[in-house]
Image: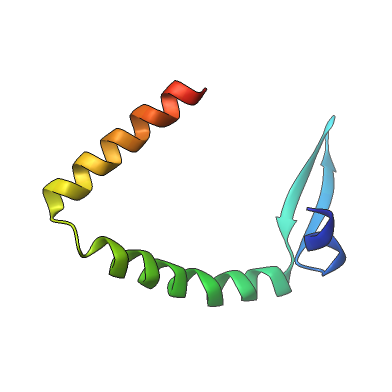
Length: 69
């Protein structure tokens, strides 16, 4: 987070006892540029799986995630 803050992409703001992170305008611009490309990349990779296989993978990953907590 320090690096993102130094690059001007996020800023920390105190809220009560916590500090919250917020995207700066530059961070929002980068987010809006990068996320669609990432979503396209993921969709392309998952297109090799049927809807049923994707649902099964999703359920298995959720199960693994719960087991790691």
